[in-house]
Length: 332
Image (cartoon, rainbow, N blue to C red; front, side, top):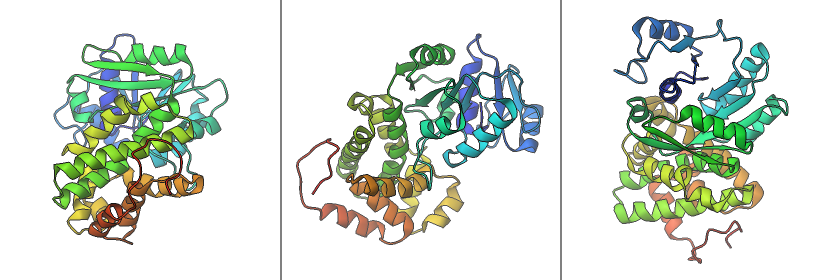
């Protein structure tokens, strides 16, 4: 497991509950990993959750020799660097599964495209995504997730490895749809936070989530994703969770924008916000592909400071009414 943040640690705990797994949790911060070994806790990200001895806590200088499955749970913008360094030291693994969500800044690439550039053809790509907060998964509360891979045998192997009495994985072949859903739902959560922060009401939030799903589907289908994916755990499930609950960092970021903070100050207060970086990359790519993404555009403009949250809402409401559709064509 690359990444000893909340999600990487939580997924390591899930894997450790299955006796077929030997789990190595890698973190970039060596002093922090040493402290975790001594304390048996990831106090910064998951306070009060014990880390069992069967999870080996490792850092820069002590990579395992025979790792054949890598789960990447690092911040998305660090995926290329961290995975690339690991492959350089250890060689290509049999499977790389991405548990991070986003679109790479500058290149506009998804995780499968990044992994494809770093690894040879024999490495299988998979992606994990679903409606989960790390704190609840770490505390063994019931949860479900989608695991997607175009290699059914290796994808189902990951399902078996993650399956436990409280964690239920579902297999999919739609790696594009699962990735797109996970990336864009963070942008929609920022929009939901703005909506709630401006006290626009639950009707507005419900409309926003629904039209947000339309944007996710429109973009995802244009990329090659499947409509049923957007209606599943990694689509509408994750979207509803992250747009409505106070544990959502992206929604919290939107609340702070609505309260008048600029994006830089809000990020300083909360920490990493994946949706903020994704919004900029997403809208640039959508313009390039001529895919209409009005909510995403207004979120990106609000983050950039070119519109206020109030003006962003007005811009959306002033748009010419169109047919309700999930089609990938550009709206006129």
